[in-house]
Image (cartoon, rainbow, N blue to C red; front, side, top):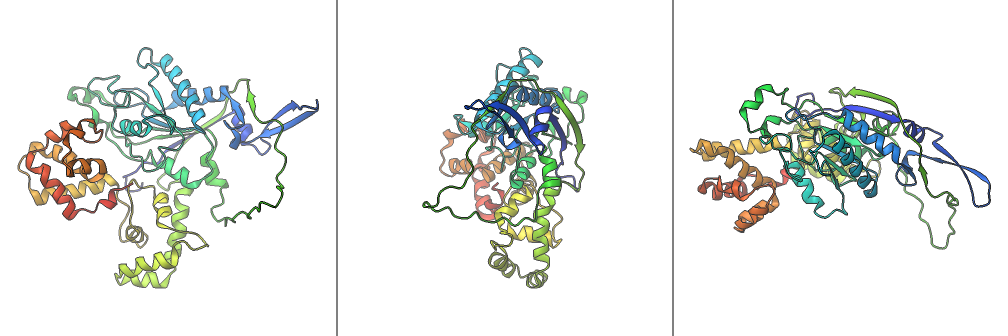
Length: 456
């Protein structure tokens, strides 16, 4: 963030009358008459929203508030590309329907129930939808400007499919329409919006560029309807030592309380926004971004063996020691996967990179795009291509071969007809590459480039 390579969010903390009660200590209290004719009360908390507590008016208000305040695309003026995170698949279906209905009223004739798309495991081809959204051809493209290739579908509504490792730099809005209690999930979701992007990359009419607002992505909005940011900033106990639950033996009768006689509640009344505040997150970031890495940094920097080995440049000994003596210990359960997730980088970090960052040997973690650009620059310096006009096509081929296992398989097995349906690198892209580089690029990558670092 400090070096300008990533973007912190502007948090839109919006709370309705109903969610304010759900978030309160007392909860949303419901009075009802049980089967014996006795008056009873039950309190619902935020965890039960869209599980045992249902309120159509609240979902309608969430979607209305989101659409009225979402960042717009700087080129076309339509709603910026967005991901909304729902409680469940049924909730995702409800939200998609509401958003499509509202979009039809906001933009008459522009959408035919394809403004918002549900992307969950029960939807056929959901994984392909995520790829198409990133490549700006989900249910079509160029809906507002023929010369501007951006996805016709503007909002993906998901539950968990697009939280980790999903790369879509032109995202402008994220919506948390559910409570989140896992710090790892929160970091990953927030990380989807942090990538920078130049929107001119998708505009293919030079005459339109002069009248466009600054095309560089400099902000994204994080809509928080359940006080998730406040929870991880003020309430979550980062130092809590979690205890394993006691095993339950089959012979032991259950001591759990009797389940409520009131299984679910549907609120049929209206809802209104009670408070809405926007906060631009500064370069210091959120507390959640700092805590896990800070604890690991302290552990490493306080270890005399690790410090001495790093100073001596004995990296094999350092990495072996950390894996044996630091990782997966009961006190913290540090491991490489958790550190990678906490870093929220769009590629697979190595342990050495993490340690180099801790000891100040590198200023920051490079993004996947930065590494790809560096590797391509090395290739150009080595191959010295004379066809300057073909360099963009060669770069597209180089990056696709590096980052897509499917493209590598197609190229290596010479199954070129499969490129016709490949969303990452098409037959047209392949034909634009001069013939000698179709072989030279794979050979170079196999000899000089580590593919592991580009995995998400």
